[in-house]
Length: 139
Image (cartoon, rainbow, N blue to C red; front, top):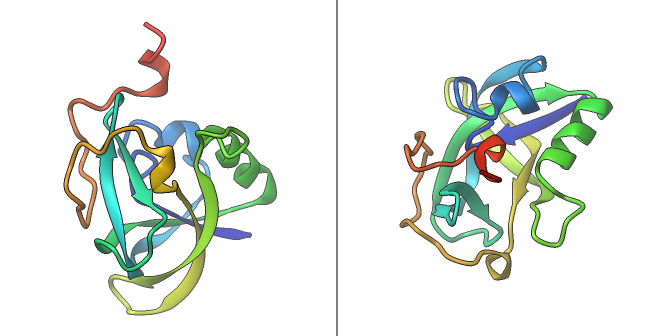
């Protein structure tokens, strides 16, 4: 099993949860041990954690346990095979309730991959009404 930390639209109750990880095991609410810049980016107002450890905030999110097949599905959803896609990396995360620390996969982008940053760094993503889900992007 692979622990995966999600901080944006893959969280429970968010638009991409059913597509990406609905049937996987919820482990708990966590936050990154290090600081990261979690920002909204255009043109879809997507939340992105920038791969610049030490910049920003400790980011809050959720950890799920995924099997190999589900991790592959999530890699495809996050576009890890595309030049403009996310890349998967390990981060240390802390359980918000217990303080237990673990390593988990998460998806980040390099700043050079981001066309425009639309927000200041935030510590937790709440659904932005301007977010455009993938299913509506070709309209």
